[in-house]
Length: 605
Image: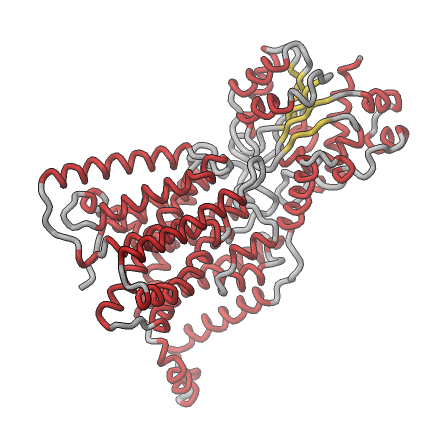
């Protein structure tokens, strides 16, 4: 008999809250994305345990029945989210309509993670028009696991038989996946390929699956001595605290995360699942309460709704992470999750899909469409068909996000390889052309061509790097997508040997999060008496105002710190930017470089 373990809802609550808090405050809850690891481990364990119990009972596994249960559990709400979000996109955020068909179909066929990889999407970088569906990569990875693992498991049970040996085999598969992650991760680059890949994320699922071989739910002893209970309590508290620290501090871009860090988190998650699963240990009670049970039972809906709410709200709000905006967004997520739980998930789980054809035939033959009580269902069905039509007929061309992601990532790669010719095909423009294009004096353009500048920045600087190098052909640019201000001193120290004596430093950091006084002080200490030019922030984010105020304050403290007022220059110039109003394009990139040039040239005066 299957045991219902309320503590598992507690674990689901922990996982979904970690992910939500990461999406709200990615620079504070830096490891919140690891909540998905807990989901993977729990799914791997429960699915494998269920299949093993089925085999023990029937000496076989009904694959079609298993896959049918997964479809009934996951797809109704997944489709509902698309049906609800699409009309909003059509009316209020049309730029996201392009490419929606591919997003929908890749989600339905459980290949959305690979589709995002092929599109050059980034899970971590805030690039123009971020998709409200990028979190569905998680369902795609699980979907692929649910499709293949039952078949592999059946073969293992038939031919290997020994649960102990199968435990080892499952962990060997997990180890291979971990090795792939380590090999494929490249420090200093966006880790999305490694983060999204089924091959590189499989180890969390397989580690959970391996636990089922040695820790079957229906065979765990209900009695244990007091020493065991005490040890179980200590382990539960200890593991929970370590995971909490990881959720708070393990950065998504750090090499530590991919060189074993995520494996350790998976191992700790396996241990926590094992502790909660045991009927004689206190872990289940610790993770069981009404709040956890409520959130955990609706965690699937909460997970699916949270990113569409955050992304679509962020595009319309000046300060989306202000406390008053966070409150109503969280309330909306809970409301949507509750409604979908009551009116989509539960009815769909109970509905007998084998009778659907018969129901339709009876409806048509009995002219049910003429009966008044059927008007509302008919209207709703018609709306569903219309919305699906808009999804499937959406332009196949890539939307704004893909365009900027491809351009910025290609430019970043060129910069990192120091292929300046690839980064700027017109690096040797005539001085008169440079002066005219960037609205600077010819004499100033000549001075700029001789200046040795060391620049460190984020994706905004990457977007403007071609133009910067047209004005400053001797400028060395070290810029990367998603970079934070606290990494400035690290990058400067890395570049010290390559640019030992620059005329000035150019810093373009702060787009992705809070700038701390210590970050600026570290840069100024590195610079010594050399002039430092810091480009202030133009991004409708909650940290824009405090970042810019801090920069102005620190400029009064350091005489050689100059603030380039990009925020003022770009105000109201939406045509300068991609749809995110953050990354400059075309004339905006020219204006960006021209503003910087006019300020930097003062260095030589």
